[in-house]
Length: 249
Ligand code: SAM
Image (cartoon, rainbow, N blue to C red; front, side, top):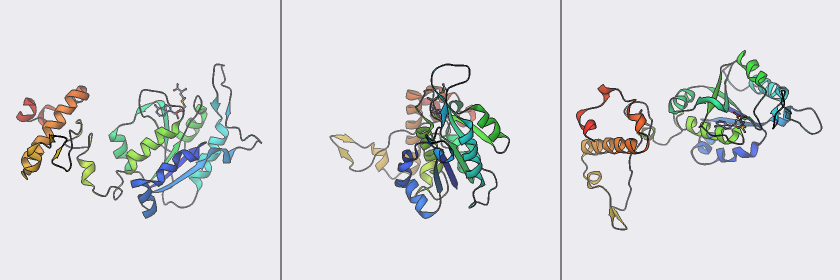
């Protein structure tokens, strides 16, 4: 998968050299390219913003550098795919959820445009929509200073689902929100060695070797955790997916 990120703070993306994503980049599974938006400015001050039409506080990002940046980045050689999908992180976007991460992980090419200040002149988005699919996505109901941290969040959520990026593909299947049995559930408590720590024992069932009983215990834990932290999710589980034991938890 190829991912291009356009930003005025390229250094923000240093963490993409670390851990899972760093290894996936080294192995060639992920081709991530970070671009400095100011490359596409033409004045001495490398200006990317201006005052908003209609007045009001703050500054708005100018459409010209964004337009040129997108033209050049999407016109670059090095991919078999003609058109990428453009992702615009914005608090006014559709909430980004695990199904988005699943779907985007199947895309061959994503471009992220990181806004700052009061956002990017809307004509940039309208212009891009004429040439490629565009998604405006929000990572939560709060306002960040810029799209960089939101992009890091989305890139990590998407990239770990790209086949081969996770060491053990099964771990994603058992995660909170994973499609299938965990779709509207949160993962419950997890434990590792030692069996007793500060007088606290690991639940004996996990040491029993009885896989059926362990699966049942994990489902009960997931139901309890979801009921405690996100009870509204339980209403989304279709009746036919709940068995008698689920109802008793
Ligand atoms: N004026 C905008 C509004 O009220 O919707 C907020 C702009 S915010 C200060 C600057 C940039 O941060 C946005 O253009 C966007 O790229 C990013 N951003 C802020 N909050 C975000 C969120 N919850 N999800 C995704 N991106 C966000």
